Length: 45
Length: 190
Image (cartoon, rainbow over all chains, first blue to last red; front, side):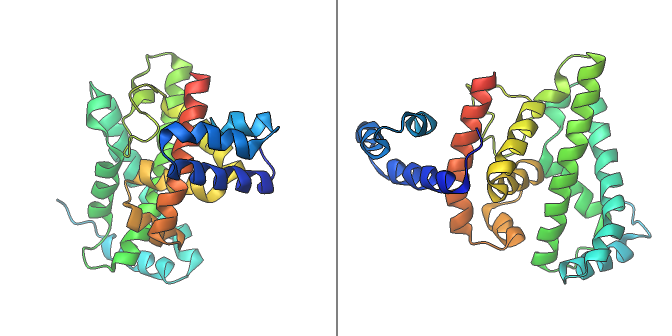
């Protein structure tokens, strides 16, 4: 899926933040940060 | 190994290109393409191409045949970078021709260096990787270029960083996302 560059940057930064967390808390972190943005969450899962 | 009469001329062209002379690349490229093509064809004709072709080995052999040993590290990196691009094209063309002729999938499963996308649970073929890389390039060209350099040219992180004029830390960071992204793309379409 092609994203606008802002969205891609956002995904990128969440990806790295999530990666720095222990695996068990990663999904919860992403769910919190993505909020209602289910699309973004799907990209990151 | 035979010494090609063109070797000194090609080495000179590489130095010029590495030093910023873009027209030198136009002269250099056909020779590099020709050499890579010959070496790749020889490997691909072998009975078990999946066991005999490795991008790194091939690019290094082309380098030894074409370029004088006495060049700066930076120039060598430039050679590997252009080779990675050309080899990708050669292998993709070959795989497409193979697929058209339906002669089995041997060439599509060429083991690439940095087995980053072709992990155990992702038996992606070369053409799928190429298409995914094109999509990645549309999104983020630099990440796609990094993968190209590592997969098709066998460059180290440090060399890829030098070729793209970024820091090795950036290469490392970019690769993490690129790998995850490609892995998802390739497992999804598989």
